[in-house]
Image 1: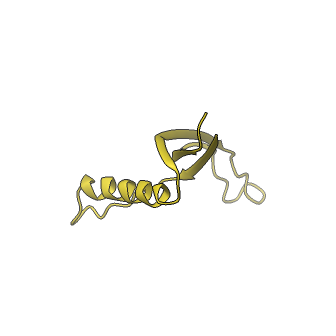
Image 2 (image 1 turned 90 degrees about the vertical axis):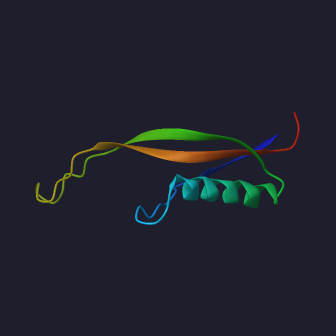
Length: 79
């Protein structure tokens, strides 16, 4: 069995779009990969710690932080 994991970042114009636009983006990506023979499995949330940036001599230093990303999981083939 093969697996493919691709990032998913939805965009939403809050002035004239609803969450249906996000659902539509997800659906279109699922259809795109399905047409290539991939079966959608699930949407996973992956968190990672981004290391702090000490800056140059402490100037412009940025603290570390936790970032979350959405990943779409697809599979192809049989067990």
